[in-house]
Amino acid sequence: MNNSPQVIYKILSQEEWEDAQKTGVYRGSAMDMNDGFIHFSTKDQVPQILEKYFKGQKDLLQLTIDTRKINGDLRWEVSPRSGKIYPHLYGELPIQAVVTAKPVHKL
Image (cartoon, rainbow, N blue to C red):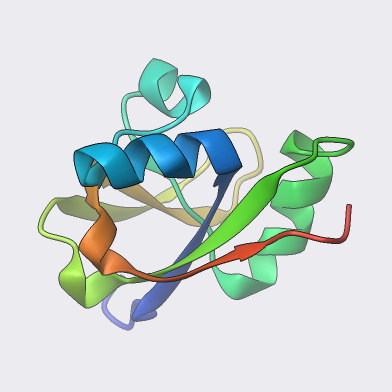
């Protein structure tokens, strides 16, 4: 995708974020590790991701990530689950790429 947004988003638990801060990198959720890449979304995709994968969960954060600070292999790929294009990172996310980490209040 040539006109990729410079900002992407990740929903994760407070605990996952605290672990990432200790190590300096985020390696992904259990689903990410199972799939072989870290799942991200665009701003428009965040509400659907929250509804589909995080409904009823508490202590969630929304990370805003600057894609220019990602050194790994970031690809825009079609999800077989939805048919939509999502950003996927094959590698670790350096926490320096995270612009903000804010609590998710609405589910």
